[in-house]
Length: 234
Image (cartoon, rainbow, N blue to C red; front, top):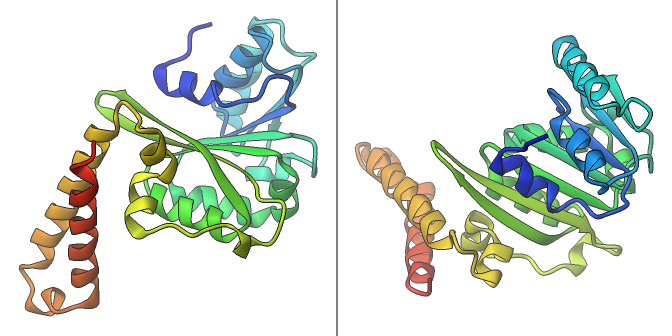
């Protein structure tokens, strides 16, 4: 089985030997690939809709993985019991949707040893939520697969009070503190994309005197300045 660049990057963050769950699995390509390559011994492939679940069962059967991979239909983490999956992947959804999934079944989320998350939008909000709810950002990745540019976030439980972890600046939440620390090869392009988005936002807001006088406008200006300062380092 061949995985696209996005799922390959997600797969690289799954610890070897972990029990695994893929939430929003669609065709179950990710868990089947992980099983086929000896990364995991068992997995739950969950999806809210009947169609994707049927497609997942077809993939699992095609690769002879039915004894190792269970397909379950249900909303988010309700397909799991606490501790059943040490590593949980939630990919291809908005950041706010991923947050909702984690909040709706907190006992399942908190029992996991690692989360691998690939938001289609809202990565800064997701990073902030994780840090504020007792998770530590341990790894991040970027995938450039035109026309898409993906951010992948890997988090593990802090193991203590949420307040024990250092908070990040708005620019770090926007760009990814681990990406900045590691100097990811795609970081310059990532920063340029975010700079452009902030410039566009300010341009739209500047058309309204009320918006231009708002606190949000000033905050966005400060964020753009911080991003530009970081840009000079990469």
